[in-house]
Amino acid sequence: MNAIQKIWYWIYPSTDEHKWFPVVWLPFMIWFFIDPIWWQHRTPLLVIGNTIFGLVFIWLYLYAFSHREPYRLYATIAMLVMAACLVPTSNGAVCGLFIYAIAAGAFTTNRSRVIALMGIDLGLLGLYSYHLRLPLVFWGSMLLLIVLVGVANHLGAVAHCAGEELRKADAEIEHLAKVAERERIARDLHDLLGHTLSLITLKAELARKLVDRDPQRAKEEMLDVERSSRAALADVREAISGYRGEGLAAELIRARKTLETAGIAVNSDIAEVPLSPAQETVLALALREAVTNVVRHAQAQECDLRLQRNEDFCTLEIADDGRGADAPEGNGLRGMRERLEALGGSLQRQSRAGTRLVIQLPLSHPIAPTARALGTPVATAAPALRN
Image (cartoon, rainbow, N blue to C red; front, side):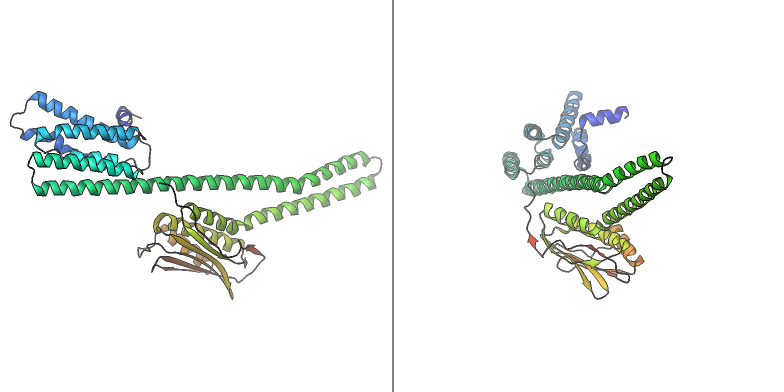
């Protein structure tokens, strides 16, 4: 990290993924620093003072976005005070500072605070507009900008908070699933191999002791060791096959938890369907991609998950009541379609009154069912994320 990066990090120590959101508006502050060019009675001292004032104001603006409450509120109040002190001396020319103040102050999920700050901002604007006889068009445009920026930043903060909680919950679910899987593997391997390995050890020791005294008995014991080891190997292979075969069932459970965490009600109708390991893997990946799209883009309230068998086809359907979209397919959907077509399957997308994905795979080589039902169809309304 070079010196410039260190200085910038000291001014704006944000590591958030949206850290560049407030920075993109700073170029509009250039008018504040070049405004002294048109002053009739400018002096070096006034120009220096104006520059220092602007730099302090920008620092407070960045400070508000990179720190938590109550420091964000303190910075916003300081910005309002600075703007209120400077507007009368500039005859209203720097009223744009009020927009920066509400942009910083409204980036919070506290609706009451946003309304209060917006009221103070508009009150100061109205007071100065009246006393300074500012044009009605100027006053009206400033009012509109303050309201739009305040509402937009507040909604952006709410969406950002919901996304953060969703990511944390999803990470926690994934961590718990991994821990549970490790515990299950350890438990199953202990149950499968503990007794068998102990038996093999005892028989090997017995055969070693009998090899000189009773070679025939030692040979029989070694045959038992061979049979036991082969049986243990078969048990391990069966266990590993079982872990791989539960991919779609585990993904269905994960999909339900993810949707419920996002505040989306889930209706599930999951039937037993015979699937090969390749088919199960493709369906699990398709389900994960579809649920991710519902959570991130659909703005849905309800989602249906259905897995059925129709004659010689397996049908997976994911439908939501969100906003829908006619946009071209992204990389996720294209990859999903390519994997399905490689197995002779198909993908259909409908975007009327929400989005519906219908995935079909041929069941030309049925094997033992691996996608087990999750229970009777239910509709679970998950609590909404906290703001």
